Amino acid sequence: MPGETVPRAFTSNLILDIPLHLLPKTIADLIKGKHTSIYRITAMKTFQNRYMVIIETRKRTRRKLRHGDLPEC
Image (cartoon, rainbow, N blue to C red; front, side, top):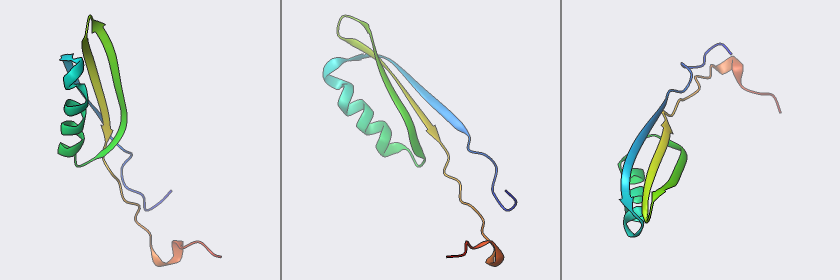
């Protein structure tokens, strides 16, 4: 649509070898540090009680609306 910004850009963070008891704290710290929308969080068990976490984010985009583009009710 005309007037929209550039499509959303996806980024991902990979964190390896996290013990099970630190998994919730690690995810919470990453969420607090982001100024973008969280798209997906994936946690996979690698070996024994160690996990790999992938956090995918995308930048927030704002739609630019002009006065004439408002929907009719």
